Length: 202
Image: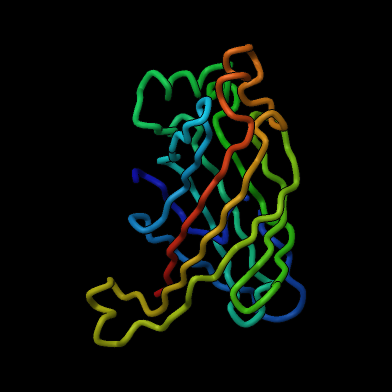
C-alpha cells in the first residue's frame, strides 16, 4: 500500500465533539497492516479492488468509546483492480469521475458502544459529490500493551489496537456507474467495502 498518511480507523472524516473529561489521544495507523478493499460483481463473478492512497485520523478512547471519532479521506485515483484499463474506466465519468470528485470521505458524528467488541460508527459518507449517512459496524479485534522488551524493536510503540468493518452499498445511490447501459447492466449494483486497521500509540 502506498503513501497513505495520517492515522486510522474506526473507518472513515470530522471529529466528534466530546463532552466532559480529557480528549482521547490520536492513534497512528500501521500502513502495512491496514487496507481499504472492495468487491463488486461483473455479471456473476466477484471482482476485487482496493484504494492505495488515503488519509485517516483516529481518536479512540478505550475507556469511553463514545468519545471516539474517525476522519477518512480516500484518493479515488488510487483505485487498483489489477487491470489498468478497468482502473481508468472506474476513474472516468461512467463511474467515479475522479477529476471532478477526487476524494471519497467519511466523517464520524456518533460512536455507540454496542458491546465490548462492537461499535456502531455513524456519519456522512460522500462519494462523487453525493452524501448519505451510513453506520459502520466496527469490530474491535483487540487492544494490547506492548511488552517492554519489544518496544524498541517496534519503534517505541507501547500500545496496539486493531479494528475491522464491512459495509455493503448500492453504488447507484451515489451516482456511480449509472451513465450507460453497459455500466449499469454488467456491473453489480451492490458494492461491499472491507476495512481492516491496525493502529498504535507510542
